[in-house]
Image (tube, rainbow, N blue to C red; front, side, top):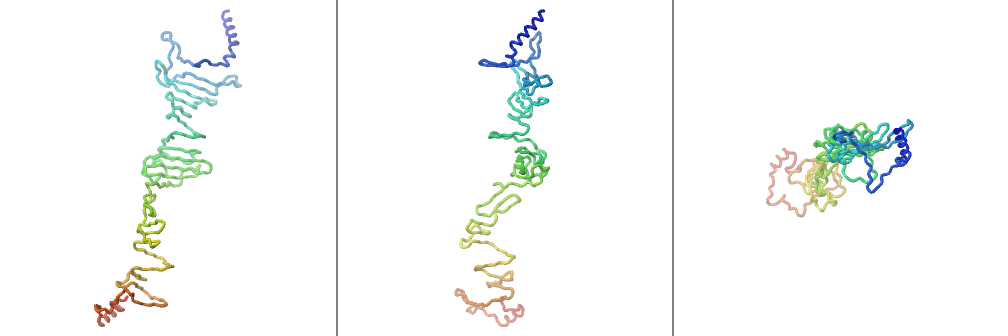
Length: 357
């Protein structure tokens, strides 16, 4: 009889307080909603404390479905993650979603690290998977530690990816002497090609390939920097190596050009210091001045002559005059005339007069 009376009281309480419990509120100046976890009761010591790895509590959002039961769609839970002390314990927080099985999507460790897609975050924010930011980004970017392997372009999709990479890990490595370097991969997507920059100790190297390709086929090319370009103002650059530039022997200050000289004669547009050889034809539309000797068909001009021609000469008129500043030494008092006998001997031996080519 007493038991039936107890059931009746509980029934009345449910009718009276049921609507309020379904719409419970926490009010006051310092509202608090708590779940209290223990591991049972010991008649001697009292309540048993929680232990490491214990599930402290769960909060689920459930819905009634057609099988006649409430099923959770989202769950928030917390577990003890370290040694339990007299005045507290470390714990984490997990947000779980998924169907038909709840899976941890967000994990906050006891020391404040946040993991998205991982339950073991190594950084303040550790995301395993793709991310998208529509606003501004501030802060540092982490490099993944992928020392080996040469991932194909098809493995990169609509992303920018940073990683630590060993030189020996590439199928075809850049022409570098570094051991490890930073690798930046840019895969914009669409019809754009994928690009990679490898930051080595001795320079920056670039390669590109079609998006979705099964391997990198194009070679690495080094980007020239100030470390590779050593030059002097107004000196035309030349390649001193496959990937380096230095000074040539051509000077150009925008007014005149000098070859093998950095101070060309201001009276000329081009000034060449040194010997010049032309294997092809030479055409002069203006005047030509020869300051020393001129040889045609010869490799040298005999001493004492300004012009030497090995072959026939044709012209409409040839006039020979003594320069007013040239004294005539042929019949000077100090000139020695060769005896006719010596002239005859020279003609017999050389086939021409002495001193004449």
